[in-house]
Length: 466
Image (cartoon, rainbow, N blue to C red; front, side):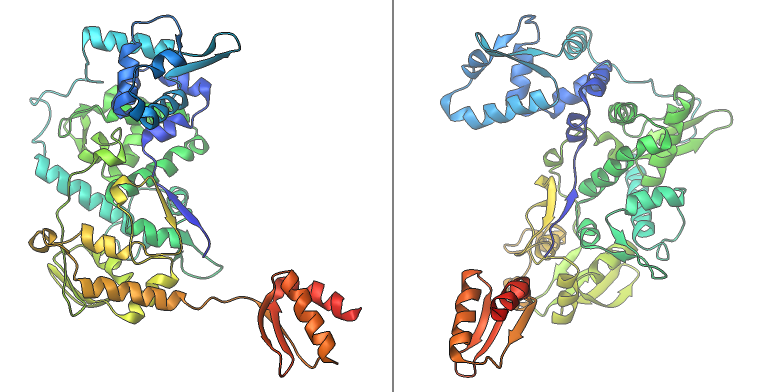
């Protein structure tokens, strides 16, 4: 099976991938510096704070002495991360050895933050100007609804109840790698697309935001400026209203795009308009592994392979269709069945049986072996069954794995058949020649038949002509 990657990077990975000049430019913004500090591993934070008021380069051997012997691996990870982000500027001298110093801009801004304290990027609007703001519960429901609508439109616009404001060119950017389309055919999910739908919401969000940032320069937006604004947005307070007039023209366009994704909610008053950040926006600067809160599950799997999903979501219904047969759907209940046929269809589209934890995964790679379906059912288990061990019946998980292994036990290899050899000596010589190249797949010495890999067909034909 071909290897497929869905990269679910958080912002710090994207910041680290920027050219040095753009990265240094980002550190002019104090919020970026604070976001970088928050994202660092604990040991890396310790190194930054210890060197915050040291103006001279520090020897690498001296920093190495700050940790115990059993912290070697953590030390290496911390230093590598700091160098990647240019928080540490590395200098190699033949006489003195390797030294590190803090990035000057980063150091100055962080010192100011510690001395004067953190401030919000912009002040919230007074309640006397804004109309009644949505509650945090309403805002969370709005974000979930917007994100679901966007995903439905992304995968199948016919399933979405309303259209998004994204242009067709923008939707193509988001669909890149998730859908494939041949001439005069409807778009079809790729292996990456199937895997994407089973990802955690935050992992999906980072994938989409990554595509949005990667293609920003095509829209005339500087990548560093966009990352800076998005990280700045994560320091706003969820549920508070912020005046649109405080934004530049480019930032207003970005905010409108983010509203379609459910990261912000837009409201209009008599004279002023404002945006309200949701949790999706304020989580942007948090690493994937820090989002450990468990979402409310909805799936119950029974020993008879029936699946009951207590949800009215069209998106969740479409996800269940990826690997099960949906039998009927009530206003708040989806009833499906996991069958051999439905799983074979899923396996053929690149979905695997079992998957490592999505919350801690930065790279989701399709590979031979168990993946995806079982973990999706476990992570979305209804609260009534979530605390059980196991939350999904063992006979179901075992059968899913067996069906997958049964499908994968036959491997197709292009081959060529040779028979009617003029003599046994020629047959045996051909067999020996094919073995030297590792190309023998099957041989029948009685009937003098030989099957070889197609890749050595030319060599063995040349040999037989001699």
